[in-house]
Image (tube, rainbow, N blue to C red; front, top):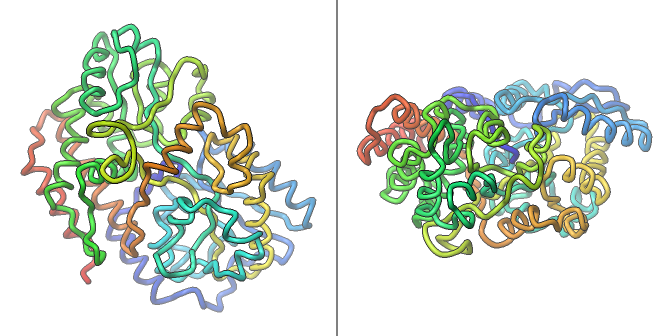
Amino acid sequence: MRSIRAAATGAVILSLALTATACGGGSTSGGSGDSPGELTYWASNQGASIEIDKKVLQPELDKFEKRTGIKVKLEVVPWSDLLNRILTAATSGQGPDVLNIGNTWSASLQATGALMPWDAKAFDRIGGKDRFVDSALGSTGAEGQDPAAVPLYSMAYALYYNKRMLADAGVDAPPATWDELVAAGKKVSEDGKWGMGVEGANPSENIHHAFVFAKQHGADFFTADGKPDFTNDGAVTAVKQYVDLMAKDKIIAPGNAEYAQNQSVSDFAKGKTAMLLWQSASANLTSQGMPDDAYGIAPVPVQSGTPGPGKQVNSMVAGINLAVFENSDNIDGATDFVKFMTSDAEQKILNTAYGSIPPVKAAQEDAAFNSPATSVLKDTLAESAVALPQVPDESQFETAVGTAVKDLFADAAGGREVTTASVRAALTKAQQQMPEK
C-alpha cells in the first residue's frame, strides 16, 4: 500500500469487526443508495495530497462514464480515516459501491463479510485471474478462500538516498546492510542534517518495518496456526533494532517520533535527511520538487549479504486492492468499474501517475515500468518481498504492534532508555490487546 495510515484504536477496530462479522454482507438496507447509473467510489490518498489524487482520478472516471453511462462519485479518503470508515460501513451496511483497501487489510475485512468475494466467475468478468501477478494475488485474502479484492497498485519498499549528501560524506555506494546504513548515517548526521527519516508516530509504517526486520531475524508475529506471538526473541530483537536507529545509533532526528503524515518524505525532498525507507516514493518526491537525478534507489538493507529469499526479505508486499461492497445495489456496474480500473490501459496510466507497479502482467511489461527505479521495486516484489500475515486479526495486529513501536520511539525521543526488557514489555501489552481465541 501507499503507506497505510490506519489510526484507529485496536478496541474500536475489534468492536466494529465483530459487529460487522455478525451483520455480514446480507443486509437488506440497500447498499450505497446510488441510482443504477451511479457508483460511489472511495479512493485512498495515494498522492502527495487529496487534490492531486482528484486530478489524477477524475479524468479516468469521466472516461468510464463516457464509455458506460455510469457516473462515479469520487471521495478520496485519508489513510488516517479509511479503515474506520470501512468498518463503520460494514457495520451499518451503508457504504460505497467500490473502495480501495490496503492490501494488508484484505483478510481482516474479508472476515467481516462486507466485501464481495471474487470467485472464478467474477474474475472471468474482468478478464481472468491469471492477468495478475502472483505476489499481488497473495495479499487479497485468507488462503483457501476466494479473494476479497482485486490488486490495483503494487508497491515495495526501497532505500531512497540523496546522492550528493552521501558522496559529500565519503559514502561511495548505497548501504546494502544495516551496519553499513548506520555507518553512513553517522557520517551524515551533523550540522542539522540527519542520516535517515522515519514516520515514528505512524503505526502502519512502523508495523511494515517491524515485520521486515522480524523476517530478517527468522521470526514472525504469528505462529503457524495463526496465534499472536509478539514476544518471541526474534520479534523483540527486530523491533529493538528498528527503534535503535533513533535510540542508540542516533541517525534519526528525535522529532521524527511525532511524524505520521509524509513529513519524512518532505524532509528527504528538502535535503534534511540523506536516506528514506519508503514505498514507491518517486511520484511523491517529484511533486515536492526533488529532481529525479538528485536521488538514487536501492534495495532496503538486510542483515548481511544481498536481498533474496528467506531471511533476506527486505520488503512487505505493499499495495492497494480494489474491492466491491457486498451491499452495493449496482454490483454489475461496480464489477465493470473494477474491470476498467484494472484494464491494461488504465493500469499504465494510474501506476505511472503514482509511481507504483501495475499488478497486471501485461501492463507491467510497458517501457514506463522498466526504468532503473522501477526495476528495483519490481525485482523486490518478485524476489524478496513477503506478504503480511493474511489472518482475520491482521488489522488489529497492525494497530497494536504499530502503536507499541510508536510508544518506543516516543521513549527514545524523550531520552528514556529503550532496552530489550522495555521492548518485550511493549509487545506484551500489544499482544494482550488482541482478540482471545
